[in-house]
Image 1 (cartoon, helix red, strand yellow):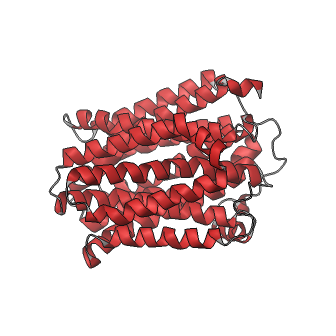
Image 2 (image 1 turned 135 degrees about the vertical axis):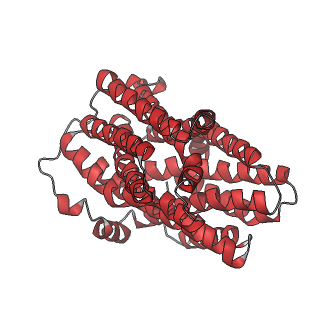
Image 3 (image 1 turned 90 degrees about the horizontal axis):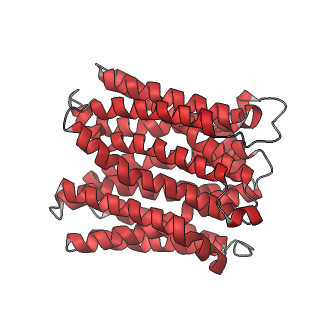
Length: 393
């Protein structure tokens, strides 16, 4: 416990690794539609191009988790960073739409390894009582990276749309060297054998997870991810097409979301969970997300939309680290394996969120994506409120 009163140097290094990695991703994801337009991609194709990243994560997150349990976090993290760099570079030099899809898919494949290893690394070197702090600051590192990345990418894109992708590849190589020199291995006891068939095609692993003790937590991870990624599609459409908000202002609002999320996770989440407990924190966070989503399409002006975006983000920011903490504490398998399955549920939410968000918006109107997300969360809240002992911790 004494060590966790101060910041463990190993935790600082893994936070920095994730922060640098997210800057690279943040530099390129807002530019994806504009870059794809150069290949005459339609809105539907752009939506599937964005989803291809999450598809790569979905299929490979459990595999990376099992590999890290067998060979250690550091070598798998390094391999993931190398793959991310190659994928960024191949995206920059792609000359066909097919090549863009392959490159984007590979970005998701290798990103799954980096994020799974990072979460498992934090679980390895924290005690159960200190894990919420470790996971919340890991989340804050992600949020902070998304604050800086889009701004840097926007500046670089004024020279060319390819430049941010080249720079992201270079930044990831720098991160790889950083990991090699400064990050120590966290896994003390490695798995004696590797069972690939249980880690690659993860539908079976997810089904097994749903039936197990962690099933409720996995469902909540999916719903959180679905609502968040749905929000990323629906809010820009609502802001620009309904309220007439400029793309620049939308970008500022998303940066404010990153600032809100990072601040909550770095400074407040540990205190919130100490006061309410981890289970009640999840319940309150989901409730705040649902209310904010339901009210958001009724915003008469952009200022109200921005306020509800921050309210939504506050709720979202307390959920992911807290869910990861509970999953980590309650698992009976290796941390990498369990975090990989959790990552698959999160990725599946990011697959369905953007696709259904755009479809609901265009088919049923601008209220639909927000209302559907809010209703799904309310149903989940009603369900978990009936689960015996859910609020017992």
